[in-house]
Length: 336
Image (cartoon, rainbow, N blue to C red):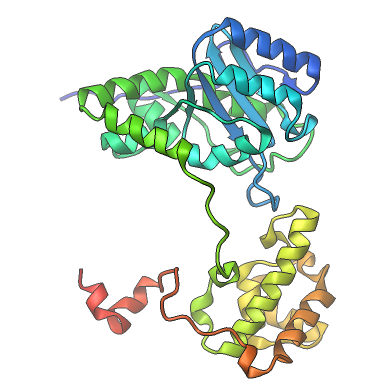
């Protein structure tokens, strides 16, 4: 009986956690070091999902064999800064390794980083048929090391970034080149390398996703909404929330979450007392009250709409109803 392999925790990069690159002198130094290295570039990005409206990058991690590991603060330079043009030119001299590339490519492209050769370790794992393809599980199963993920949902927009967060971020690229080599060998052995390379190339060629039609319809909990006048309130609140969130660059759910919007659409409060009573079961948050008058005005505007301007109920919504409803309401779909 074979012994179970216990993964060794990876606690810090072999060369230690580097200082943040937040000046042009440091950036130029990083470029020089990377240019002296060889082979592909391991790249990762940290965003502030759940905290900010935008999907911009708040930290870029890059490592190359012989070229060091670098943590770049893109906020210090801004999108389109000429120094990112230099970085892009350098990255395009070889392959760029990303894990789950479709998540990071948009924010990298916003900075002017457009890889021309890609290796996606997450997609490689899927193509190879591996059971778990997250970065942590792959490193654990293939390389015998484990990563802590306690900062994966952190607010990366804060400054200065704590040292432990920077260490966490650096570890995401510490072994990415070695993992790429492992995945490459697996794809060769399974005769799936050519297929994988075609998939990587198609990701780079794919156009940006078009804007969603009626994005407000993706509000969580819409299955509770049974009437068109309630839909009008959902739409009005969603648009008002989106407008404030985009201007303030704050995640929409921080201003008013989806559950609150649904409850407001059902209860239709007209004043602060009714508003608070409606949302108290959800755990009323002070942040929701900061734009109280806007929410009440949005509800009133929706209520005042004539019926012919209410949104239509959708029978072919792009979100599935709760599976617990399938057996009774959609038996033919439940059967398979």
